[in-house]
Image 1: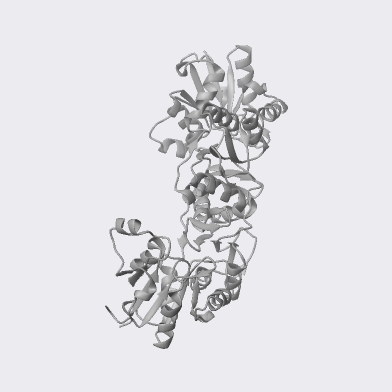
Image 2 (image 1 turned 90 degrees about the horizontal axis):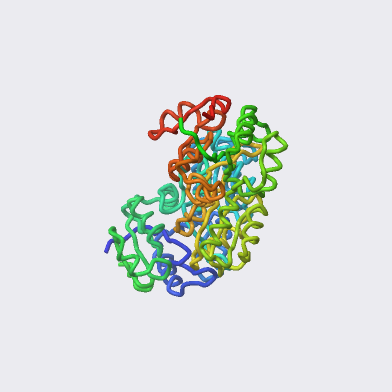
Length: 255
Length: 255
């Protein structure tokens, strides 16, 4: 086993499930802190700010500072800035709109914009979706925070941002740039925050199709933990396997 | 040219554009009426009742009775009845919900239903989409009124029902049964109303991908008219060509 200089860590299914901490996550993160091994949490959630995510982790007993959080919102805002986008129509909640605004990009309801960003919005309506489609038909770039198909709601699995993105994609016949896991833009951002080359970093997560594939796509070694969504049968069926597979994070040894 | 015993006729782009009649449509329909050739209008619109559609046509000067209208809503309601569906969760407007109710099917907000119907709903929201996804995950059949990608709105081309269907499809990973053109269920219904075998019927329309393909799929001859959405360049690019191509409906000779 390699000694990794930095860790990228998924949240839901790896650190907690909904509002309950996964007990083995606490000593795992404590070990990283005690050993002064830098770690960054990487989440496709675009509805919460980095401060809100850090607060939730702290309340659950997990050491985290807001500057150790990379959300798909933050990665989206940085991407728009890197691409010199000046104006943007955004479907999404304040956790997405605020970072975009803070990166100096004008948010507007106009369909004459440089870019359309589609993120999860529980207050979605027809006019918002129509505005996005019309702006893209007029030539705006099409950016989606992430391709997650489903998210847990009170009543069961509701549509995730990937489903809303598919709606806009189907209507406009244009393909988006995806920011979040398993795509690489969020991983590049997280590696930049960590400050190590990809060979020295380990990606930790429970979801094969987001966390583990994001590691493959970014060229980062992967640690799969069986505390979340991907079952043993599902994992075994995939051709490309994670670098390491463990039952829970207590099994991980740091050297 | 064959003497067709019955005609199936598209509406938008063939009889009218938005709220303006296409002038050549009036004498064309008058000819059918004078010659006692039965005709039925076939529309993917699921938001209006057959009465409302007939009234609109009459106001534009086109002879039509409500029992000469087949909407995707009406075809959906008949299909549900044929399939012995007892309970249904429906996304859609009153033009879709009323025929379903009139066919003796219980409409409910429960996720424990025999079927989910997805039709266009300008009052769409997250909870409606989540209810549809959850019911389908629990095993409800998935039915969509039509696969139209886009519809005209005041501001430009907004998402059509095919885009909302793609959202549910992406989230649940289940494929729907489509009722409307170019799929065959609505055509079977329209042929039943007309009462002639498909060899004796002509399908008239302006949209290659809905009207003309519905003819191909149902085994009905097709008359393409250049008064609507499909341009000459677009039409020429398709491998399978309509039976007849005309500039406008005045060019059509009945014998």
